[in-house]
Length: 390
Image: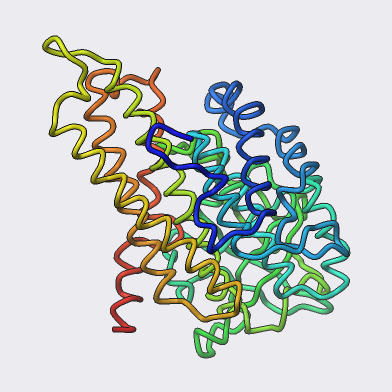
C-alpha cells in the first residue's frame, strides 16, 4: 500500500476481476525491474530500446486486447486501463507512450479494419513485439481535424500512390509498420474521402524526414514522415476505401481513454513522490508536511485524481459492455489532461529548487505531462465534444 492508501491489488473491486489485479501486479513488477533502473539512459538516447519492447511482448502486454488465435489474451478495455495506468506510474512517460501507441493507437487499426489476411500477417508479430507500429494521421495543418488532412492516395493499377507528409508521429523513427491516413477522393465529402493504408518501413519513397526534438517524452522517438510517390498495393488498404475517417474517430475513443488512464498514473506517482519528499524535507525547523497549506493541497489533488481514476474505471467497464461513450471519454481526456498538469505544477513547487533540477524525477515528469492536454485531442477540442452533447 502506498503512502496515500491506494492499493492497486484491491482498488475498485466493482470494476476489476482477479485477472486484472494479476496483470497490474505483473506490469508494476516489470516497471520496477526493467524500466526504472535503466530509463535515464533511454531519455538520453531518445528512444526505448527494442529489446525492452520485445520483453513486454514476451510477457503478453502487447496482446491483452487481441484474440487468443493471434497470441493475445482476449481481454477488454479494463485491461487496457490497467496497463496504461501502471505504465504511467513508471515516471518515464516516453516509455509508456512508446508501448501504448503500439498497443492501443496504431495496431488497433489493423485489428479493427484489417482483412483476415492482414491480421494473420501482422498481429502475431505485433503481439510479440517483433514489429512495432505507428499511426500517421496528424499533419502540419491537421491534427484533431482529421477531415483537413492533405496527404493523398491516387489509385494506380493494382494499388495507390501516396504523396504528402505526417507530423509528430510517435514511433515514427524506429517503427516497422505504419497505419497511414490519406485522402482518396479530394473532391468528395470530407468524412467519406479518407482511407487508411498499411505502409511498411523501407517502402520506396517513404522516408523519415527528421527525428523531432521534444519538450518531454524524451525516451519516445517522434518523427516527421514524408511520402513521395509511395506505391501501396491494394491488399494494404485497411478496411473500405473512404471509410478511414470513421475508423479514426472510432479509435479516438479508445486512445483518449488510454491517455486519461496514463495521465492518472503519472499524477498518482507524482503525488506519492511528493508526499515522501515533503515528509523528509525540513524548512524552518520542521518537515514541509507540517505546513497545513502543503498537506491540504496534496490531499485536494489526491481527491481529484481519485475522482478521475474512478471515472476512467467506470467508463472502461461500460465500454467493455458495448456502450457508446463519446461524451464520457471526451470528459476524461479533458479532465485528466488538465489535472495531471495541475498536479505536476504543485509537486514541482513543493520540491522547491530541487523540482527545477534535471536530476529530479519530478522535473522530468512535469515536462512529460504537458503534452497530455494537447496530444490525442486538445482539451479545448474535447470540451467542445462535451458541449455538443449537453
